[in-house]
Image (cartoon, rainbow over all chains, first blue to last red; front, side, top):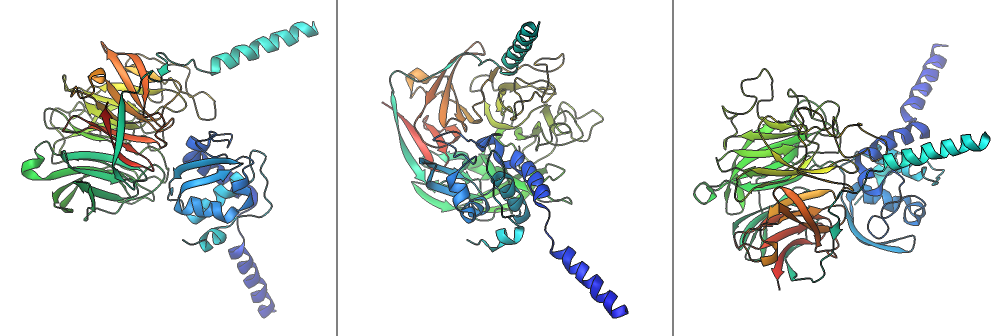
Length: 131
Length: 375
């Protein structure tokens, strides 16, 4: 019986330690990060400024390759990119966010302004994206 | 009756929309009819060239926000060693750099950087002094460090200048905590500070005899000051600061004065909601000029040399939002004309400095340092 209980509690412990925060709470935290670090350029509607700051709302660049966007947030982005058939040539600086913060803000932008993305981005996933 | 109700509701909503959209402030920005200048890139490969100061006309220092300081001598870019660790987050990083007025004899330079020194997580703005020996910093000394640290990404300031009395002025922004920092004289952030050249608090600082802890404060109620210049004739300290959405300001800072943020502002939140209903209040200073809509001002210089005859005594301010250099014509401390310079430059205009040769040098994100040439 003791042994069964031990296994039972160990399983709970493993379960807890490996569980990620829920999508809802990650999106909520991501909104805070967005309002702090991103909103000045990408604006509250995620539309950016055509020709100057690329949109996140319904952005093919974002939704077609999530790893590429994680990389850009993690290490910065410079040079020509094409977003929704329009060319952009600016600088987005590495904002110095922690991996869990990058995961949160990704979940927020992937699920706002009409965007939807089924996969939950985790800090593990962010961690695996290397320079 | 139904119709009346509908009409009434429409009227209210039209009124509230027109009230919530602030009117564009005059004078309206213009594009020049004739372009009477050209430019050349004198140093490239910069992402965010925040700070710049000249040792001589062919020898200057420039900072890259991500944490590198360069010495560009006769067009050759060398990395300066011996910098402290930079806390890179959001708008923070390695920021302004400035020479001691007597640099030729003492080789002292001053610079601001965000720093994680201290107990709490996060960072805040620090002012350092060091001796520049060739391409190396020696005798590094921390002169001031804003407290507390914060993980917020916003509003580190920062600009540094010396006034005519040898005092050093520098700015720290509100660090994303407008409710606590800018109006509290016991907290850092949202302030312009004044120190002696070795980091002491001058005896005649406005609050040096007051019962407050931050006696280095010179003026307060600022949001985020990223432009500061000494007036070429009067010696006054001219500054500008970012507003939220609308409400960027030019101020001439005076000792002990309160510039109002966030109690009064001409701006609104990024989301469109209001911050305060009032734009003026007794005991709080009105700006010399305010921008609606915001241009996101950065860097500030007067053109005094006469090298650009039509621009003499005009004020130049970079726009991070619209990627141009703004030329402001002033008359009796009133802005009477605004014009876009370097309109198609293709990057955020981060900084502008008048060099010892009288030319205007401009730091542009993603491009580098450019020199404006008159035609």
